[in-house]
Length: 609
Image (cartoon, rainbow, N blue to C red; front, top):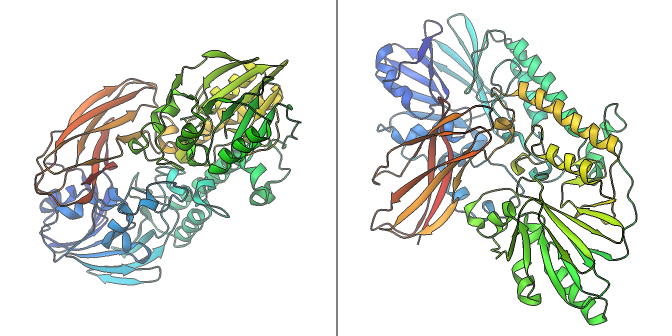
């Protein structure tokens, strides 16, 4: 039985489970701050508590609240942030909404939410400024948004101490648990909002600091006995991390007004000018078209029907003859939505890197930003460095994990030119890493560093972005500058997170469930896998178990070892009970990684037909 708890004062205890659960004791009853996976219930008798009177939640995430469904008594009162009450009482409105499944540009609310709604409990919403008197304690509610849109913290005065239960506002001195929850749009969608919640988070941290607490207790992390020092260092690190992101951000080219205060800042790369396109290229939407001397064409990407119409018009006018092939740079919807119809109209083969093909051939297997439901059959899955000839050109395909890990680059050589089609990975102002959900890894010869190193080796005369009308290039010095920035970011982002690689805090999908969703029927068997990427330099252990709905046949947990910088997998066969009605079910996966209990960290979905 778990016994990992500590007494902090006469009436305050802390339980260390998948999260830290605060316990405020009054005789034989308790008020809890968050509930985690519910294992805290197993130690209450050790501290002579036989009744939970109330649970106050800092935010709606599943790791805070998944244990609720294990509670048999409905007499327990629940207090939740007023802005998040929907995600406690009507979470199905999220899971059952196809707009939250496909074409994902707004990340909020995050998918780390309850698998089913809280039922049969008295639920009271709380907001900043509310006060609660319970036992010997006075509790003040503080709006501390940032980690989620409605997060709150609880300022507790008891036993002569001032204690803040702060949720995931902070992890430890100068650290946060992860970064991807802070993805939020400022002037555009969440998709463009890397660290977009940092202003809200900093405001929340300043609010906590102003209360001059004696102790800061986070959901994930260590108890802080010097809250001011912890907060000051985190704010400083957030500012530096954002500055180094902006210094080489591709987004400065698209939305310069977002970064007006950073203009001409020392240490930021100047924005390059474009250069003329070769005469044999055309650009429509997100598509580039290469026209050979014979008049045949080769197309890169097709995100909309208008591109097909443009190509048909070019054929009618005699500007082009046959279309011989199409290359997919990456899986995003604005690059692939119309490809199934493109294949029907033009009947040409489709080429893609293996990482791209994996998603577009089975999009239901994944849940990523900008994902399209369009299913595309890939005729030629290319290997990294594979070359072939088309008309007077030589094509060489590369795995190009820039804007997203699932990305390819195409080098086109001919007419004494070296053209590199980089998808959305670069603009004249730098690299396109403005969405943490795209899996932009830090590290030497990893992610963008690999892409930049390739540019230094290939020395293309022209680089092409699918959203930019004109070509551009980078000098060797600029490529060195960007790589040095990334190397430094590996260090400072490493300091920001409590992991041995910063990629755990930045890569939202280092653990993912596969397939993400699938159709099944009552009485059938389904197969679900947890896939885990080990970003570390040493072997790591993974223990995993699907948390199945009540009444289903249980499955045993499984474990394995994952080698450094590889992806491991654990697969489960699940019996779907007979006589189920049509429904959409969320299956969370409980994860223990390298001995660290992550709770219900990821999820898969079953559509019962």
